[in-house]
Amino acid sequence: MKIIDNINTLLGDDLKASIRPKDKLKIAASCFSIYAYEALKRESLSHF
Image (cartoon, rainbow, N blue to C red; front, side, top):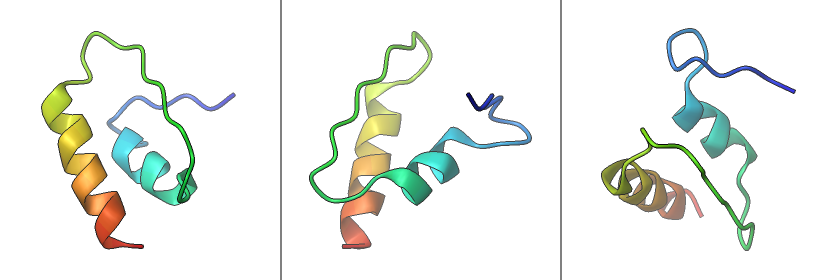
């Protein structure tokens, strides 16, 4: 298991490195906003 504190290791960077087309992602966190999800989605789609 990897600890992501969003200071030394960024969640967005880790997700961008590991998510591939057709992967499914579930996030259960009170601090992950829909705005962060949309930004990640737009950026991820631009790489494929």
